[in-house]
Image (cartoon, rainbow, N blue to C red; front, side, top):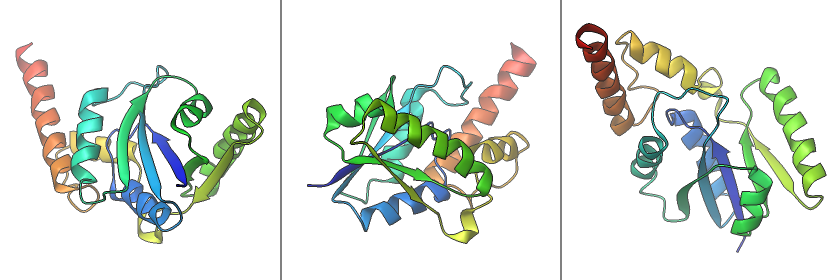
Length: 167
């Protein structure tokens, strides 16, 4: 079985992420979508909430597993017996960072492979930061995220308002 991991913060998962996962499903037997604990980022959703949103959003795909990790991607991939990692590229700006990470991962594990996949062009402008910003201003994000995620964004906005005005 050819297994790959698709790591990311997924804060929140978008249709762009899901499009990359669908593309990976055409190439590999199993995709482990791995939610990262990234101390350099301040997430809107907890790790558990992000895992939950991914599991709900990907439940119709039996060859997709959702998990989480808090360390080096190459170590996690090795533990899972993955042949490499999937990374989504939307624009040239993504490539520079992802290329550096791919080379470093290869340095850490010479057999490690990074597979770059581009989402459908209708998702090239889409990222989680934009979605979070839109949601904070009550914009309709249903075109960009699964319904369950859109609902969780509304709940988060409500929590934020209650804290701001009552806390």
